[in-house]
Amino acid sequence: MPVATAPMPDHGRVNDPLWQLLWTRYSRVITPLRRFGLPTDIETCGGEFVIYADLPDGTHLTLASEHSLAMDPDANNGWVLSRDHRDNPTVHEVLYDSSDAGPDHTNGLDRGPLLGAVLELLDRLGVAWC
Image 1: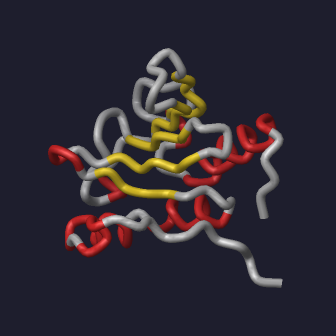
Image 2 (image 1 turned 60 degrees about the horizontal axis):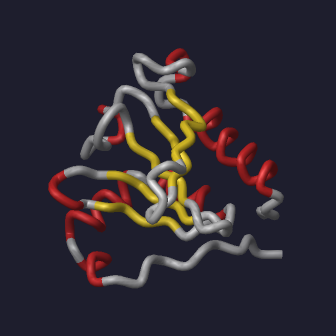
C-alpha cells in the first residue's frame, strides 16, 4: 500500500527559484513531515527561512535553527522545533531544541530525535500518521 503524503503547497512561491532550492535542500526533513500527513511549507519572508507544518488542531510546527534556517542545512547549529498558533501568540511550546544552548544540543543536526519529537506530539494529539 503506498504511503499517503500531504499535498504540495499551493501558492505562487513554489515557482520561485529560492523556494525550490530550499525545498530541495531541506527535503530530508520536509519529506518525513509530509509522509506524516502534515502539509508543509517554507517561509522565505525577509531573508529568514523557516519550515512550517500544519497540525490538524489549527496549530502548526515551526522548524528553525537558533534563528533562521541557513541556506545549507549542514550549516545550522541544530534544530529548534516549536508548536505555535498563527492567531494566538500565547500558544508556544518548544518541543525540541538541539541548538548549542538547547537541552537536546548533543543531538546536533541528527534528524532522528527531531522527527521522534514530531511523532510524540502527534501521538499526544491523537493524530494518526502513516
